[in-house]
Image (cartoon, rainbow over all chains, first blue to last red; front, top):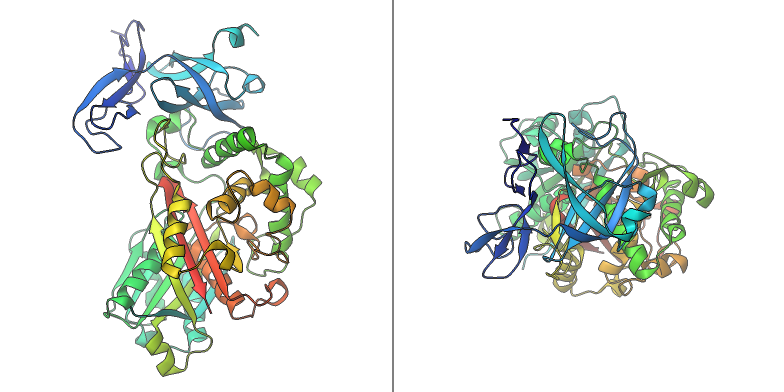
Length: 140
Length: 381
């Protein structure tokens, strides 16, 4: 056992030990139809209890982004020494947008760019996630 | 319904001081009492707006004015704390329980980015998502993409606010910058630059609020009517702002500023075109541009045109942030809305000196921040 765990409980599905089929966890509401991030017992939109666990799509598009130019305050676990990185709000076909770091060079990021989900295992065994360019974007 | 008025206003400058919260807070509160011509013993309840100060700071600060057994309550609603506290005073007076209430905003904050543990979960901090400006910046990037808003238009807002600050002795920075200096200042989070962003700091501002009957009885000097004071939080997924980790792509709810302003306009029986001067949440320069649209000063996507046309200059049709805004004053979170209210009271009394808006009769204060907390106050002389 390597003792791998998700950066937040209920945020990832799949086999965290082997890394197989790891995806973002989502929750679908059978009442209002909203899909939300992570495993939720109640729908954050309507408060309904009739919810089902989902695995969110791996592929998405950058809806908007920024480049973080200063080290974020607090216990940041990214590159040390710090280097600027893009943070994107990625729209998934499931009907939600998810905030995450983008793994490519900040200059490469464009709104509408195709990206794909990538789990990242930290040295401390914690699995967090980011999005990487997909398809033609990745080839550039 | 009982008419509620502001009869006194006081402020301690915003900036960085080697003084305690008790010192700066009691300074502003005393100034407001003196301005109102009311004794501390006549005040029946007090509310302190604050976010970063410790428990029961209201009592700690206001006890300096003298012994009292009145209720003193700390109120917190992130950047909208001041609106939430003022709203409590309005309710206390409208209920008939009180005739005179003190509302104080005070804050002392360390330099640099705000302590993320106040707002974010550990995993968000670990993944690098704990920089507040990043959220505002992503809104700016999207706005530029959808509407063609430019970096120059965003810089023009910072230029205007810095220029206005020169006439505000209570601002932390009282310095004008050229557009070149602003556009050459370092990027913090693209496309927002160092000279386009507000910094946390220290400050305090206070108002004495009373029933109109009380104001008449004591012959209050230039009372200013509270035409509306509304605090809301963002509807489901209506606002992508810290500490959100995701948002719906299918729900289309109106944003918190739109909702709060619509409620405030309705209560006041006024529209955006009736308002002569505005103090709004310019956490960064883009934020002010977006708020033009959300307060209905212009249609969606045309905030850039408004700044280009000078509509929001101090000499324009709808001046915004005559005080220099948070970009110049800094944002002592709990004090920021009360600071806006003090500025508007000064404007509506015609006592703002070189930054006076000619003939100002109606003013609007707006704050917006974490969790989609938003407050709008409309004042009328």
